[in-house]
Length: 174
Ligand SMILES: C[S@@+](CC[C@H](N)C(=O)[O-])C[C@H]1O[C@@H](n2cnc3c(N)ncnc32)[C@H](O)[C@@H]1O
Image 1: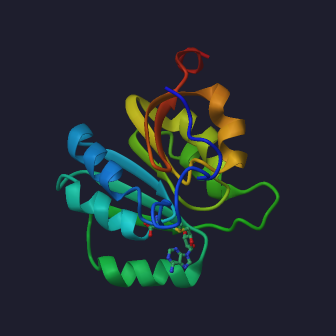
Image 2: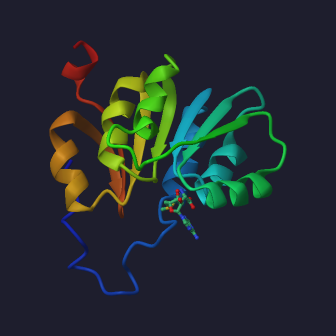
């Protein structure tokens, strides 16, 4: 399966992917995978989409760098025992933002990447995803992402600018 071209030279402005273009893809994978453990970088509309499809005893962890944005999402979600979150800085040279998932020593059935430091998050996610799980990257047509991650992944599908993938088989055994 090929990657998207960089940018959207073939589309008019009305057709270009929008901020929440990932929604149908994310809904589909939450429904089909029935994930028990989900990780997300960059909460927002995606958090609602995931929680809408999540079983009562499943868990979602969201990582956000911006205090005000996180407060807004917390207000929207209210009490939901399936959801926890962490606010982590992206200003340090070695960012805990991406590394945080590795500290949990869990494997995740679904990992959604839509925040900051996305290439770092992909590298961390490749190590934290369950062998039957998937990683979903939004805005995947950005050249800085595609050029760097392409050798590391096996693509399941790519719809508009939302890329669904797993680690290349050789990475699982490394
Ligand atoms: C692409 S957005 C995340 C979108 C999120 N996954 C969603 O579905 O809405 C990436 C970051 O932008 C920041 N942000 C600030 N204002 C925002 C806004 N009005 N909408 C979405 N994200 C915003 C947040 O820090 C967020 O983590």
